[in-house]
View 1 (cartoon, rainbow, N blue to C red):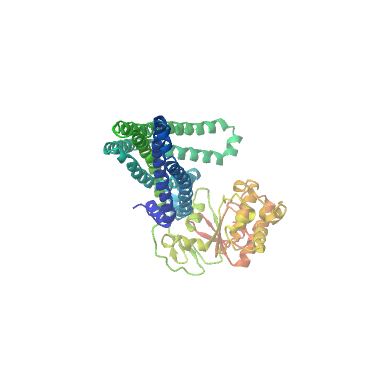
View 2 (spheres, one colour):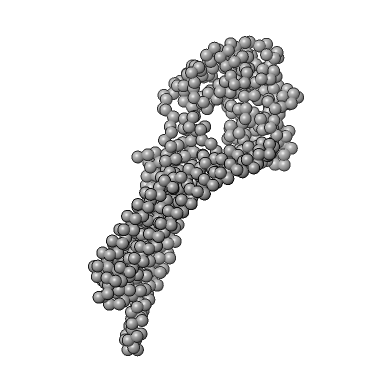
Length: 539
């Protein structure tokens, strides 16, 4: 069984009460619908014949009992439909409330190449549309029970008119099932194509939306619109194919009840007319009652594609490693240098030499690579991700910000941080005055990825977030890029003072002299020699 199949099976067990109630309600709805229409046909025909026969027969005809039965079945159908919808959707929503977090955790725990290989559009497609397909699957779990109950109720109406109408109805239902199954097999490719085209459209849109400012600046709005339109046309074409197949499904499911009714009526010619009417309408509703189950075949292709896409993420697991004990506090050993705790290390080298990659390897955001790196005496290839990330506070060159408040963005590093600690981190990042000047202070909205802030303010907010992380080492990637000289000087002096107070070590990647001036050693190149630098002297 696949990982997704295991999760779904577990949720079916967990939601068994709700699903059982939905199945029972579906059985009540379908059987009541069949009995309601069949009894109505018998009652109307019988009443008409009694009226034609004259006042004596009409007065002797029992109107009350059939009318009560019709009212009862109508109430049962309405109430059962309500219970089925509520119970079925509640079970589905409760299952999805666990499935989406499980999917998100799987993305976070997946191998780095898998997790970082997902674009925003692709990840959102899996999280929203693919999971919604699983929701529909849960909701339809009650449909087979309704079909069985409808069949039993239909046979109860047909057999009084003769065995032949009952057998004919069974044959028509069987042919409808077979035809629907073949249509589902034939349309599966089209259903999969819709899911893939939808994923490509969302991916293209997310990519272009992220670069909207640059596209406007270069006047490429029409070019971007054309790319989105191309993917939209591909989706439209795929949906048109699915709609064409849907017409054949509708033809089968629409014609089958009528054929069943005509067959039952023609085979009931020797039965009393009220029984023949009851058999004809009962046959139609028996086949119609299986419609909800048969409609599930129509989405077989899209559901199968969604399950494959979800399982690809859920099944991607990081190889299990046996964590080794690290030295505390941990030292860092590169291929050409060794840094004891508390050392401030500068990394200065040409662009593209691997400085950022080195920091990402240390926090487990890249595969370990060929060059050996050890943290706390343990090779990072043999250390768990949790071990590595506990050692470092990381401020990347392009820190991502939540579409939330200043407080929410800072709290990512330390959810339990006090108000004083938040302001202290902002002060050390030289951002406290700016935040105090915002309308709501720490509760001020920073916009989509910090759009309400300037580039330098976004960088300093990411730096403040790293300050809140309680870790023995700080990894700072171009911490002052984009800052003016005066602000840079203040940020670097505050950083030097903070490191002195905390006793933390730091690896600082920079092309600028000011950050390197507070370093104990500067390493030129990832694999180059470490050169001791007198404090206050730029490398």
